[in-house]
Image (tube, rainbow, N blue to C red; front, side, top):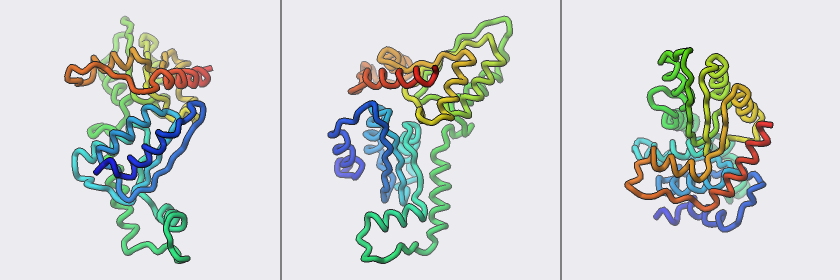
Length: 261
């Protein structure tokens, strides 16, 4: 039963301990199998409510990696900001030495360990491709489409993006370059979360966007509500904000303000 899975047990404990919004947490899970779709739903919800938490999941094996729902769940974790990877030799040795009653025995990899790692690593990389057709991030997909449609220099364009995470440094650089050569395009980016906001490369990417005229904003309640009503197949259900949405908004807004100074 999913409620007894290790991921759910961890979340029940972690959520019971209030996390200060002003602190950053880096968490690593070593798991025998990647999380099931039910657990993924809860983990992604937790990450959305705690933008100051960075989660790395190192899995020994991939469970039902051929199943559509399981593959979709892995992509959902990745898109939520979790780093999902396959356990390598060093990590198995680390777990053996720190979590296993090994009676003083050293870690001994099994036959074809390297082949198994290579296969699972390749399979996970294949699953986590951001776009199955273009293999690129949403920003690059947009630019490839936008550039393919010739823009008239006699017209002004106002473009608004709603994105789950702020752009990575590479995408930010390409978007900034695009804006530098298209002064008639005004871009507004509403982001639900800031990706690696403590990393200087990611900070520089955000500043480069701002310097080229892009308006970068944190999504608030009204923005989430708008996206829910316009872009989500909601079955007529009204938007229901999660706990701490306003606290997270204020925290991320302060972080973004400091970065863009």
